[in-house]
Length: 511
Ligand SMILES: Nc1ncnc2c1ncn2[C@@H]1O[C@H](COP(=O)(O)OP(=O)(O)OP(=O)(O)O)[C@@H](O)[C@H]1O
Ligand SMILES: [Mg+2]
Image (cartoon, rainbow, N blue to C red; front, side, top):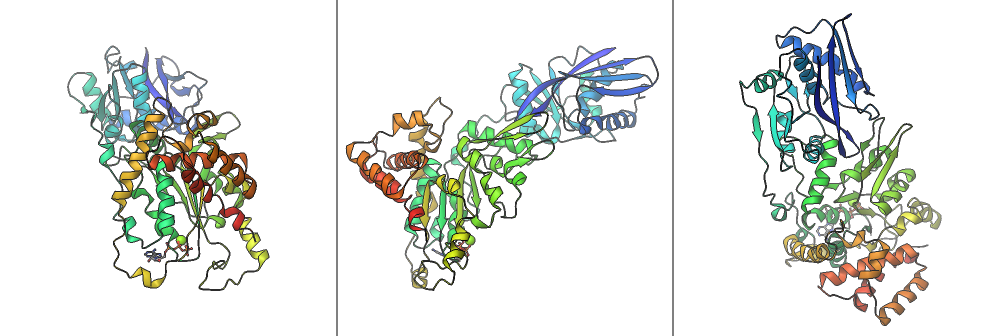
């Protein structure tokens, strides 16, 4: 008898519906899976056979053919175990074929029949809803993650026997109800850090506030110990909460990467990723035989912090150029290519020279001009061009570190950031754009209108600093954010002047 079970596979960050067709017919005993299965799916056979046997059923000594349709979609992962086993049980007549209609099933089996968690359950749940299927059966440990999607009844199962009993009407499965109240805006990730820990550094703090408000990239340059790493680590405490769509997108990526669990099933904060400078390009951009998201995608809607910027390999840094411009990465393989979202704020920190003291009034720099030039050339011009805000972080004098002056807290700064972001959310509502930094040229033209004074100011700056058309657009976007922080409808000259000043460093840095 032929049976058909609905399940799903992941492509990029989305689920694709797959039908598992099972045929058991008389003939020489065989067990075949057809329909473009990857090795991980082929291995299913052994787990399914053992799980069914060890649960007390007699595994059919016939010719079993499993077809995964559509055949042209590549299938990967261990989540086909459970639908295949269920299909066999239906074909064996142990489960009634009528009962499984209206269910989508995904999960991995262990040899004794227990159901183990799988990756990508959130996109699978979203697909279930899209396909109009009312019920979803997933491993118990993934139940919470799936329940984020409203409008689908999520059942969690822990053993294949639970499934048999459930479809026979002998037992209920645990139902995970969705939490409609996601409390996104009350949530801030602090880890006990606060901007008030940092003495002085008013200019750097201001730059990071602008960056958090509009999602702009920042390059911090300063001598050792001036507080660059300290500043960057505190950015999550002032980031605005993600909107629902952003949280879901971020969670989907983490779901595919297998980084979620029963306690952390929805990413409610913006990610902050700080990979070490020894990272490979595949680690940063994504890669592998079956492409997995890299750091740029794991920091989607959040922050990618690259400390000791010039220490990263040049080809690794240059691979950032495309996602920084487009907001996504495409990984090509011989047979297919996969696109992952990668819209992040890049925060980079570096010393001005190899010894670190170039331009420092306290200590002489011991580097030669050639050494300095070589060091800086590790960060390419096109990459520098994509950094919206360049700031110098000079050291704070030791005597100022001990003064008892109360510094502004992260909570106060975050309040202003949230206000500026809500103006942007309104401005771009319905456009799938959430901050000024994502404005395409068409919207820059619409929302970054300059008066005569502004126009002549930016023209002079372009000439004086030799700015590229890209830098020009980025300045306009930063100026828009500065105006939003003051809740001003129009960009004024002071806003523009501040934005320009953040681009002047590349000229001054040349030796
Ligand atoms: N403005 C400041 N307020 C309070 N503490 C500070 C400040 N600046 C530096 N410090 C102290 O100096 C330490 C070093 O700072 P941090 O590690 O951020 O420096 P850095 O700029 O990243 O240096 P490097 O270039 O060597 O990586 C901090 O852990 C902190 O103890
Ligand atoms: Mg540091």
